[in-house]
Length: 198
Image 1 (tube, rainbow, N blue to C red):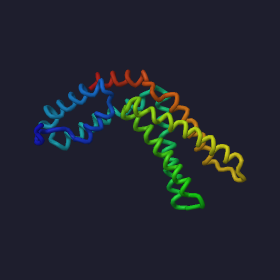
Image 2: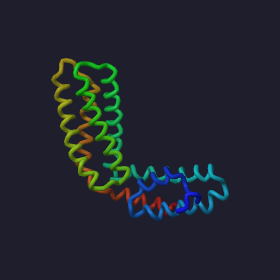
Image 3: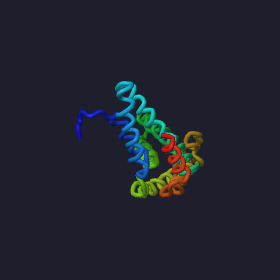
Image 4: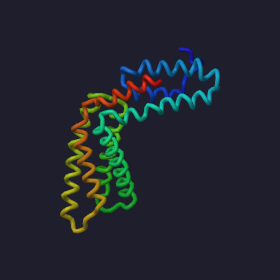
């Protein structure tokens, strides 16, 4: 391949390839690349053509949030919420350093990694090979959520943040068990409509 040949932004094209399922990858990426090289670049220059290409890639972002239908959307939302909460908890443990903070930091980091993996698997369409490991993560999240809920319920001082996080962890674990390994119909229908538009 000629390295000096005009091409769309490498990172944007790579992201597009990861966002699309295998059946739509080649036609969509090929059509966008062709339009970029033959129409956009000669008429508008590199910067405007790059901006156009990135906008086209970003137009596929709403598609992956519909993967798995309503349950998939809820799973992604809950995963983002749990990821944010676990990162905040890990940060606060590092700042406050109460006794036993290393264990709590490790648990928060583990939760963050499971949430991040769930988000990436759903967005990047890794498939069953990637998802089967998340079933173990789902069981761990349910166990941690139930344990945190029971400890908080029996503690002298009830903490609302721990209560909310425990419920979010249990909800995410249950949603993971229900949705992982089951592709959604609405996601493929949305993709078909979107590839027809492009």
